[in-house]
Image 1: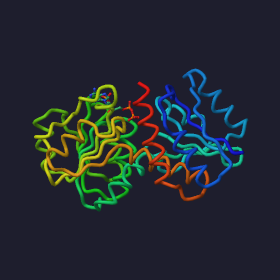
Image 2: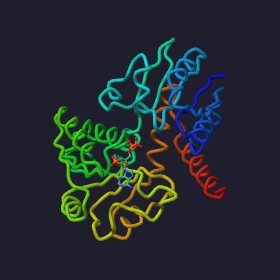
Image 3: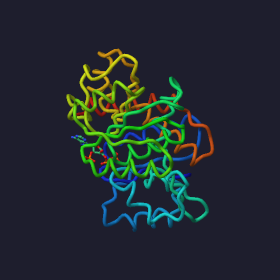
Image 4: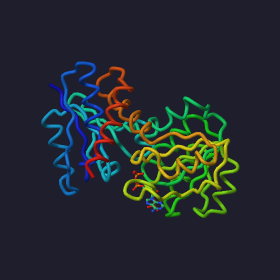
Length: 282
Ligand code: ATR
């Protein structure tokens, strides 16, 4: 039997096990996916243990997406560019790090829009914002505006994108500036945790700041329809729920590990089911 898992802290709330185990069952793959809560001072030991035990692959979540890098043997080109890893595969006796977060967010967007030549507003400048911005760069986006509560982080991301030839601008996270920029962009992606359960009434953008020609994507998946997505609907914009990114980043990890096409629809159903169960329990 092959063993996969997720490491992070906390991991109790993660629904990746439900998603991946459903995929293994569907494809009759003899494998299991488990949660491993790892304390910060145990990260190195945990990674060495994973290697020694021959655990075949794992996801990495908050807060270790960056700090795991020194303990890996190789990084895929994209993970290196982003500076963060969410997927690790044991190859022989070496660990290789990948990042599927950005692609996971872009797949649902590309289903309804060509990114080439478009303009985007990214809210946030953390790991998710970095991986998504670099993926937009690979898709030949015309321009990325970045707004973040901590300006310094936004400047760092913008400078890193510019090094690779991306037109990127840092803007203030204030309503007037956002309003002007939103009038000029084709889509907005919230890469912050604002609006996540239990703060379900929070949104960085109100409905009167949005318009009907926009696509608005949220990376927050609980609640499924965040306040931001509700506001976007009121403004007549198209919306993409955070569940899509969750499912596609998971599907891409699955494919890296197994080399088999992931059963995306089964993974989505099991993720939705797990969120509903989580919300019933609380
Ligand atoms: P991840 O790796 O999931 O992106 P992260 O690196 O902790 O996680 O980033 C979280 C993002 O949400 C950051 O952009 C953070 O802003 P700061 O860089 O200023 O911390 C943003 N964020 C979290 N809570 C926020 C809030 N209440 N208002 C505005 N932005 C917030």
